[in-house]
Image 1 (cartoon, one colour):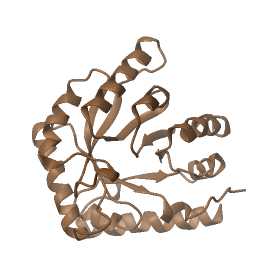
Image 2 (cartoon, rainbow, N blue to C red; image 1 turned 60 degrees about the vertical axis):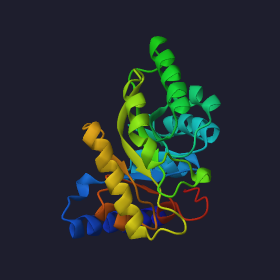
Image 3 (cartoon, rainbow, N blue to C red; image 1 turned 120 degrees about the vertical axis):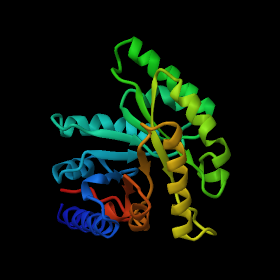
Length: 239
């Protein structure tokens, strides 16, 4: 618990400093704790420290964890984000607990999510449409997911027509190699602005992780997804 407390304070200070440098309020940036492979006990500890948004990318693991966290902290208002690639055969499971899917990058995935959400709503298993972000690919690497700039508005228009989905913005990951970080986030910022020009309510920009959240905030990120800087490279299993 002490380690989590210290790490969280450091991350929050980084966010505050980056916002100050950009002339923004720290309240304009949401912190999503990336908790893939992290046990439910540590998620409960992070809840106790004031966090409420958690990112997962392994649907089977997350489905079990959501139930465990609900038992550990039944009064907590927890918001679960899916932040990695989603196989279409997994969407039926995630629509029962996910508040947002940040990695929609194809019409086929959007349609699968839309169908599953509408079915869950019709049967009373879900109340609201699913918030989605379109994942934008900066470098076109097919192994990292995302859609190229040329197809961004076409997919956005399709998503906006899905009754079970709510288009809330853009998500992107900076390239691992090649494009310098500053240039990559400038490109992401530009793509987000292009999306907003056609869909003014799509104001969320999820960009920036442990190593680059500072530059992401400088380029307009409203959500940072932080794993390593919070929970380290290992499973903590807090006591």
